[in-house]
Length: 370
Image (tube, rainbow, N blue to C red):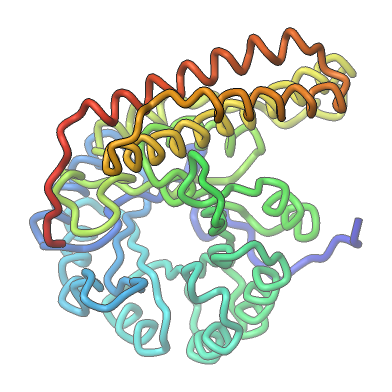
């Protein structure tokens, strides 16, 4: 393990003195209209006295032609949110011009996104633009799992004189098909916490999950790992959102997620019994196991779509025999009981067939222009 380091920062409770735990950052993925921002902020305010309101003004999109943010006019709408609700404001900046416009509009906190963190040239340009500015900055992990890039971004911003600094763990891009939009790689975030113990860490379940089904689970996981806060995307009407509609929750659902969290006291962790540690390890393995099964069913759904489009039968005996032979051989190599693995895979295969039949029997959707 590398030696611990300390960045020259001010504790978060001094520049964000919220009484509640976790610190909550919430709001829509993108600013779309003044009405959308105000209605969403009002909805959040109904349930939370203390929160930071987030909204993307400039959106880095993978391809041109997609909604790339409303632009500078959205900053005026953000100011209305602050006037009406008293919430602090935060938005993403990716260029020096963004920093200038955001600060001029009174944005309280800036964040650097995953697609910017991955580029040291861009981070340095932002660091230069932030010199002499007393503003908190949140640094998201880079899009790809590279701990040194994340650390480098924090160091560049800190060396520019920014002492109100925190990180955001939003998961990492992967080509693997899993239940997550971005792989959590909790071990990498925890390694950062070990190396820089004085740097606050906020979890972004929305971008890790990519859907709302797992948001509560990931938020609780972050609390169990003693994260300082959560950034959760919330929209007054998620189905009509212009970006990331699938991962945004309503203000009401946001309240359910936060109020359902169990906040545990970190004191006494050192006194865990060996049995408690082993049970926690079992829980982690079970999480991975369920996620792997969910990923397998997602692939089965894709197979079902292919079979439907190519008029193929669902059940193919040769393929099933091939799967069973391979996993039984692997199970023996791993020291697992053969009959146990066989029964397990019969259940998994039956569920895969059910998923494929469901896809093949469903009406085929017509392609629509996006």
